[in-house]
Length: 182
Length: 274
Image (cartoon, rainbow over all chains, first blue to last red):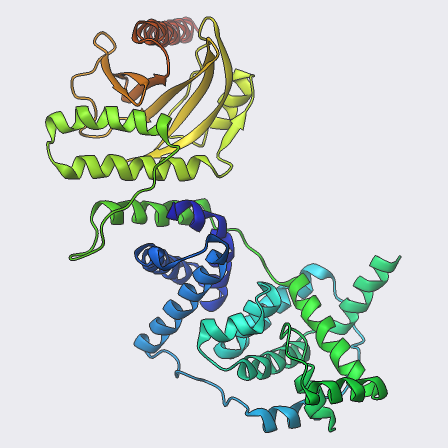
């Protein structure tokens, strides 16, 4: 039953749609409507129910990318992807970040993360959301977005770096660990 | 091996990889390079932090409802040249019995496949909704009544049917309308009491005095139309028993209305006296 399967993934799809639309609820709902209809019409293509989550997200991501291309609201690829050599150079240039001085409460940090995610380049935001928040493997995301796995890794690295620059994330991390250890 | 190459090859989150000479070399490099170990640990920690802090809003019920309504319409009116409607409705016997029976009545006034498809779509929709936490298990009528208030667009009175154990309620979504299903156990068998807002074509000839009867897959259905609602009792019970229970529900409903009218009348009298 299509609706039953969809219902089990609805919240995750919706919150991803919401992030893809930078928090615009009406746009997210519009996207969800289109995703649900497309998935419904192609449901017979889903061979194994265990793969439904990845399949729905693939439909979501491709529907979103089609809409973006059609609307021409953003360039198709907004960032310059790195090849392996350039990616290795970027990795080599990594420096251990300094912990910020200020202490932020978790709610405020969460708000800041939401704003920072929305401020990311769309191509970076998609990848960091799918991998770090929704827990997909980079290989799965590469298939969803039809990009090489190495590109997923390099976008992920850049996305995390930008988020870290915008957030006092290390301080929160240390406090979180201290609480867990305590 | 350069740090950049080792970090790329050992980049966390790539999943199982073939152990090549390069990966083996990268792992050896990692054992001797504190900076690379720090880098990999840092990437994992940042990923955990993002995962922990990311907003996870739940889809608003209204959004969910609109999307599923749109799907229900899609089932009824697939796009031109579209696919064959395939509803795997096995296991929906109880809900199907209601809608199959209702479809017979609807088709009396609106013959044709569309009405039938509408009912099938409605059954599917109802089943889906019913399996996702939109139900309450409680033998306490007051608790269930409170749970239903605000969830359905009408007041629900739960009749305590003689020789029947009340078990709870759930919401149903049929034909684009939200209703309530009260669940009872009678003579060891399940009985569902559907209460739905009446649509424009619903049960034109059914009244509290004249029940409509139907049967499907061993389930009997008795329905009537009263006070803007479609009422239907569905169960694997003899028809005569179901009619008896339906009469009881009508009597309780009538008595409750009369009682409410009486209270309103007394209140009006008191107001005038003051």
